[in-house]
Amino acid sequence: MATYLSRLHHISLHVSNVDKLALDLVSKFQFRVFAARLTAGARQLAFRKGAAVFVVNERPSCGGEALLPGHRNRRVARSHGDDVGPGCVGGILYDVRPHYSVDSACNVCFEVEDVERSSESLRARGCDLLVPPTRVRDDCGLVTYSVVKSVVGNVCHTLVDTSRYRGPFLPGFCDVGTGAEEDPRCPVTHFDHVTYACPRRSTAEVMRWYERNFGFQRFFICRNEDVDEGYMLDRDGIGLRLTAMEYWKCSETGIELPFKDGKDPDCKFVIAESLPEQGRNQVDTFLEQHRGPGIQHIGLFTQDILSTADAMANAGVQFFSPPAAYYTEVGRQQEIEEAGLDPNALMQHGILLDTDLRVNGEDPTSCSKRYLLQVFTKPIFSEDTFFLELIERRGATGFGEGNIRALWRSVQSYMEKDSQEHSNIKSKQTGQH
Ligand SMILES: O=C(O)C(=O)Cc1ccc(O)cc1
Ligand SMILES: [Fe+2]
Image 1 (cartoon, rainbow, N blue to C red):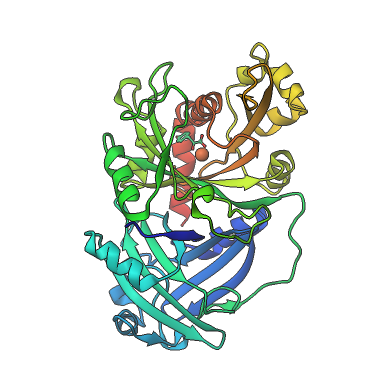
Image 2: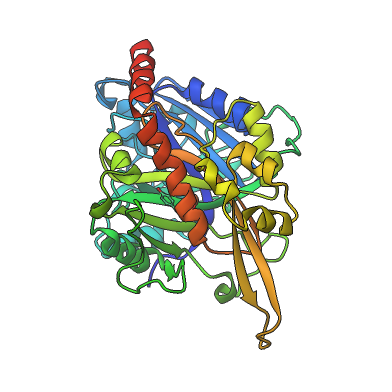
């Protein structure tokens, strides 16, 4: 039996400069820092927007962790079944310190009911358990966690059971909430999806790993998608294979969940692989600059993409725009207006609209339109690697073909046209560090 994941708990990023990313998350992306763990050997900050939580960890800039104070303590912390008082632990908690030379989003942490049982069954299935079940406690209670290595590049999954913990986040983190209200202009509620960039011909193995170990289920992005090949975009300059999976179906769990309609918002996982025919592309660039497969982007679900993009852009977030012709294509203005939106407002921030026509029930003459609105931010680290996406779903639950093409083009045209200028800027930035 695969391990049952209750929900996504947080996603962690490992960066060389926590302060820079913290500033971006707070001042540009409107996240709020709410918990921190600052010890001699670890800097870990937690940021929240709705149910979307990022933990930002500082990675050593050189030499690896042997140089860090607290290293010996960390070993003690990791022995099976130890109770760890977080005050005495210098090293990083709830994750492994990645031996990685570039900034990276590389841990998707899941809440599970029984860390010990889940870890044991993952180990029995041949998974690489990087941290065995470990208990951490403070005045607010107890948490158990373990860390398992994913089959995708440097990605790991922390499994955590917080059912016996009452504090603001996790033991060892102190509350640094400022008490500020959420910005109503940015109604981001949760992580919508995580997209992996993977090498050619690796999708099937990745899918099998997640099916077998976490019970993920494949879902089709498009009706004409091939079961074995996935959704292939291999014409018009696009060379992309996409395959999508979700980690559970709400309807099948039969469990009462705390969200509004009784369903936790589920986070989907998308595997992106580049196809060779159309030349070098954004997935190849990711693999090269990230130095291996990993999380390429994360979709933030917003209830209002226009006001979110507007507020974020005013705060300095840069978005990719599709080629200008996108908004003047035949029928596009009408499509946007029919969705009750202003074409100029969408164009201002490069927001894309996809329409999905659904037959209502048995009656083929009764159709309703479902809309999907998306925009990609420019990469948030100094390499052309990880970025965020805003996504608003008005009834549409999957991904739209039109938007995937336009998203692809919006990134591709930036990479191609600006490659020279961009690499100059990047080398200047790197020089400044
Ligand atoms: O549509 C989405 O949100 C996707 O995540 C699909 C996608 C994946 C990778 C790309 O480089 C471009 C588009
Ligand atoms: Fe996406």
